[in-house]
Image (cartoon, rainbow, N blue to C red; front, top):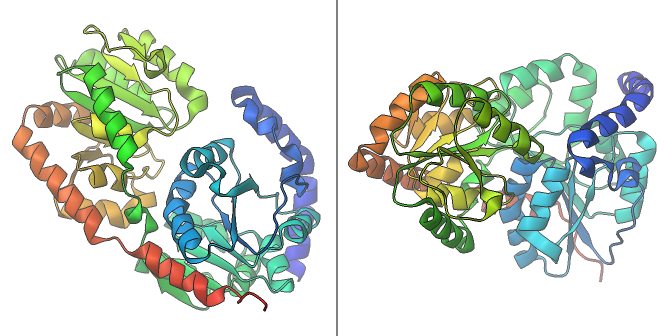
Length: 421
């Protein structure tokens, strides 16, 4: 296929940049230099027996894959599960959530030789790509080896659809070679169909099926004890640029005795965010100090991994990051599932339907700036009844839309070859 020929030429031209990219990322996150061979299809991990492979590029996709992994292990106890990632934080999240119950590795970059090595080494019976990672060589190689490759929990924003549409022949061929596609919403399905996907099922969003782990809720209670009786506003999964806006607004408009807890999305930014708070003149304490929060502390930096549900359980009100600036929002379903009232910004394209439904049922309120965020927070922190109503609406909203994991499991089952003998 001519389109894939030129695609591969472009990949070869970009090979030096791949190494430069890994080196530059490693300056903030040294883990990028670990397991380098896996990036090009060289693996030490071995798998005996039949294997089901799921690809979850980073943290959000990995968390979404967890209930599917649990369902697959229950239905297919004789199969090993391989979880692949593209980022160290995704890989670490897999370790935190699933431990040694799965195999894990990096998915190689989409070079033909690397993809062939990957498939030859692990020999998966079926592959499942979470959300939207369309790699032409990977899809073609699976098709050539008769390995069903499914796209599950697929979401496609208008912006991403426009980017894929710039390469129509390449995108159309890859979508047509997938064994099945399950979209989160009708809008996602329509965009995929417009790009050339022949048949798209709408099965819902498996992120509704992520339940708060009891041990995380217990940890949340312990964290709250350390924070003391004052009101707690959580800024969860914040992205670059958002913390500076929030700290500047807080310096101008203090929240009385309320504590602001900030949990950055990316761990390599922990030190940077602490410095930003100090520069704004705010008294900062870090979760990693593992000490009671001092009365004078204005900002508690959540510099820990794998504890987001605990932070939700410990707060009175949650703002979901990635929505104040144009990042598309992080997962607003999780705080709703814990029963916490939620504030979100205007940028919600990664969770557009969930945000729309949560706003309609009164589980969330939308703000347009850091100043508006603090105004809304001050109002809600002073109104326990309003917070209770929003929290109850959030729990009902999350419960009402569960079930995508079971539907996705049935789709995988239809394409999983029976064991020989």
